[in-house]
Image (cartoon, rainbow, N blue to C red; front, side, top):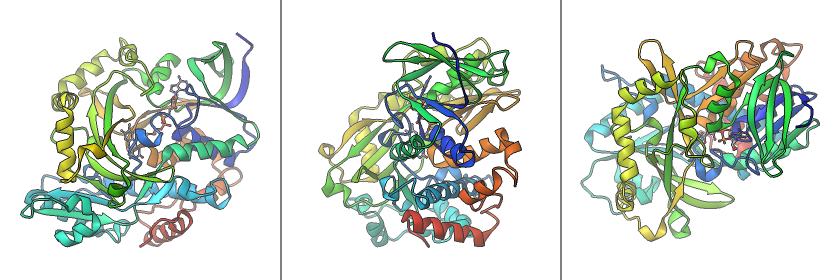
Length: 496
Ligand SMILES: Cc1cc2nc3c(=O)[nH]c(=O)nc-3n(C[C@H](O)[C@H](O)[C@H](O)COP(=O)(O)OP(=O)(O)OC[C@H]3O[C@@H](n4cnc5c(N)ncnc54)[C@H](O)[C@@H]3O)c2cc1C
């Protein structure tokens, strides 16, 4: 092993999260020396890769799980509003990068695609209407439409209506400002931009195998070149573990007390994908339905227009499943290796409290291709098997979070785990995910670099990148409209 080489910042993993943080840090402080280590031989190939996720620019427009119905029958839109404006931060960073030439063509990664929620049956239609009324009372959802009219629906989503029982009650909402995003392409564009920056280096085919803090106060990482087998040591004052499903294991190896009792629950997935142009040309929407009982919130089925490398396709799913891998390119031993004496109780508590989820996942795993196709036909009645192929989705490692009362619970979100001094940070979880990478990284900057966010140092630049920084777009209607109009223009999205 060669001597330790020291840099200011180490980013582990070349997915959308590390790439976004890298861009922020280089914009805010160009002189920082940053090295990134990625175990695969390219960027954005795990969860961030286009076909490993659904590419929804999540703005809680169409995902019904963000707007629960309360016991009194009212709809709680608070979570939806948060997610909605988090996506505005992403739009602002991407617009900034388009304007300064770092992203040459926004259509290399983002396309306007309406977001729709579609339901059948009286009860679901009533819920959707109430949800629509609650959302459109707020300026953030200005322009959302609701219909029960079959002709209108046939225009919005012809494939969803063709061949459907004419007596079935149908209802939908639509907002045309939605987006489809190729997060893999975006990650690669960000890294190409970073590779031109001084003192930023990316090392592909390099696995971080260990991380420890030494007496010099620095984090020392052991990194293995998976091609040559060489192991070297790199150290830094600040380390971000953006290793997706690989983050939990690295946090555990670091020995920090903050990760004690945390565990991971892997959910795998498959899609049905249709590249047939005569079919895909007739669908221009992301159509989200209602989740089945017991299903995890991120497994709501949806029929999505995707635009990847300039080609239109349709993606349907995800059909959830259980695999013990923590990364799509990982090992079946990942889950077992994550079990520690300190997290066994958390795992058992979650197993005890989530029987409905367990049943749902077993049901999904046992589904035959005929069953899967029948679920697609609930969305697209005239779908033909020969037009569709199976595509394996990325792995999502849901957080098992310790809790004094319940022992532990499943958290279907993302969480940054910090050391007390904020010198080591790891990102756990996956939803809403890539869409909110910018929001998550702004949060990280505020926690880890609070002393730099002053008028004399990083704040003016941060406000240039994110013009709404420090303001609430939920409260400030005028600013919200302005940010949306400007970013829509730069990114060529629809504006209302
Ligand atoms: C089925 C599915 C659907 C989804 N749909 C959406 C969606 O519609 N919209 C949305 O916004 N989000 C969605 N997501 C979530 C989104 O894909 C993720 O939140 C996001 O891609 C995570 O980015 P990341 O950079 O953290 O992880 P990744 O993209 O997984 O990157 C982590 C990288 O770390 C590397 N790595 C791991 N271990 C090591 C190690 N020890 N050393 C070096 N490198 C390592 C991996 O190889 C990988 O390249 C979806 C996810 C899934 C699985």
